[in-house]
Image 1 (tube, rainbow, N blue to C red):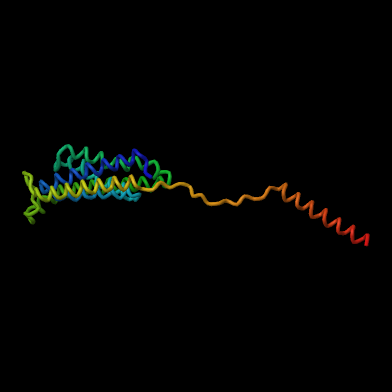
Image 2 (tube, rainbow, N blue to C red):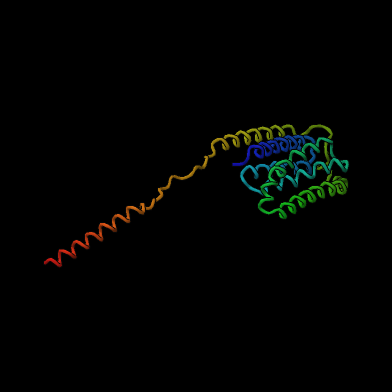
Length: 208
């Protein structure tokens, strides 16, 4: 079972990522849709005990504040990035105990890749929008039925996840029978009786 603080951080990442997903679908910010999906997917995988999930969440989270820094996203993207990076931050001490160097390399790569994606999108976005007008962002909310369907599916998924977490069996030590060795004094006493019986039989044979 995950520590409570890590579990809560992953739930917060799911909620923030899902809300970002709804907003991005409504305003047709498709690159942000991808980032939000990776954020939610990483948090979900981590809740299921997959270590790579926190790394995926960090990678996606790193792109959000960088997108704001290069001028292609609002300031609240920084908040999304901080929440998405929190699970990796909380997991880092345990990961470092296993392999300190690998943990540092993993964190560095995740941040660099996430930031590089945001910068690359900043450079290539206008060319992509010009070549594919259908992916051009909207200033007004669109796709109302799609957003409602996503909202319903997301709420159902969160409820099912909560029920599954509550019903998860708690592992306890198995009651296997353990064979306890016989006390030494009992073995010694039996040896004495056997030796005494052998001596008595020997004396009886001599008398005959």
